[in-house]
Length: 295
Image 1 (cartoon, rainbow, N blue to C red):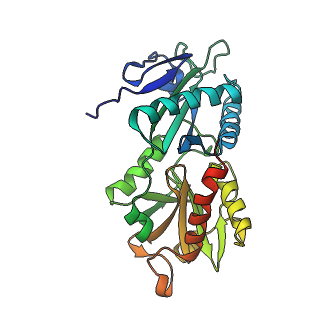
Image 2: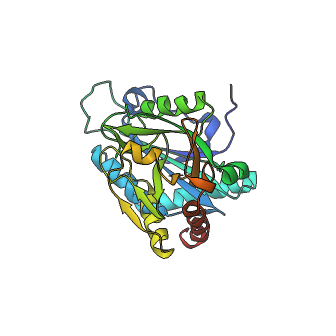
């Protein structure tokens, strides 16, 4: 069994040891998965695109009819407290800040209770980025039918579908499972997915089947700054399999090249099975954006 670290966490108004933190067995997050979460990357002790993460948290809470328990300033103060504590303890530079809000504690009933106080939990951990080898060679992915529920736009703690999808790739020694619904690209188990075609970056349009990753708008900005065409539109499965490049984006991966898909190399010609030029330009631009978009 993995040892739980004795790091600082936040639970319902109090800071304490992660090892000792406890919630009620009647918390609706535990009983129903009735809650949402956010993961904010922290680079050199600064929170990356914090306001965008808070806006998405607010959208997810609103879709579940949960009142946001804190203002943006209050969230920021709590985030900074946890980041400082872990950075001082571990000497770590890059971290992940995890925020979870559930509807709260109530007797088990499917109907949403209106008289409960949300449960708020926060913790920080060391960010584990892709290895230099993965950056240099790219990563392998597998594909699958998107069998998850219809509300992928909510960053819900109900993640069993994503767990099953991610396990499929783990069973094959791959990094991610890229999914398709009705013959079109949606996303991966824990990443957004992009393709590059003739120098342009293409992604699935925003919908209830796709979580609007924070990197959606970021990559649009980076493409505009670097003269890369950017377009959101339905992407057929065949287009992904025939793409010049396939990319993943997430809080932990930044942007990452997929060079093998279902055991077959991605791309064409001399770059077949290797990270491509669109990835290289976006990755470098992403690194330049980190200090500029962190608070």
